[in-house]
Length: 50
Image (tube, rainbow, N blue to C red; front, top):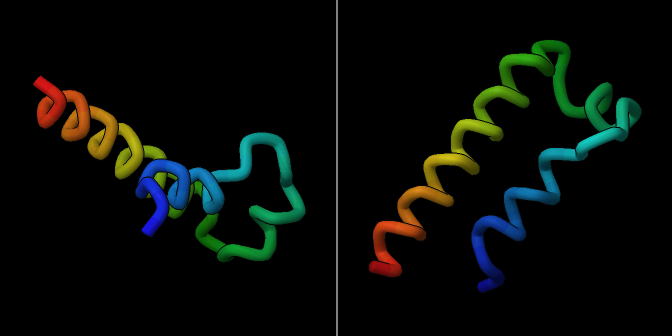
């Protein structure tokens, strides 16, 4: 399996409004969830590296 952060990046398009329109009508909430999950995973990865 690929690195989870790389997989998560596929679902967080930086500047692609068309892709966001396809995801959900509640897009801002979903984007927030994905962004928070990514930040949590980054922190956990750093903790595990110590």
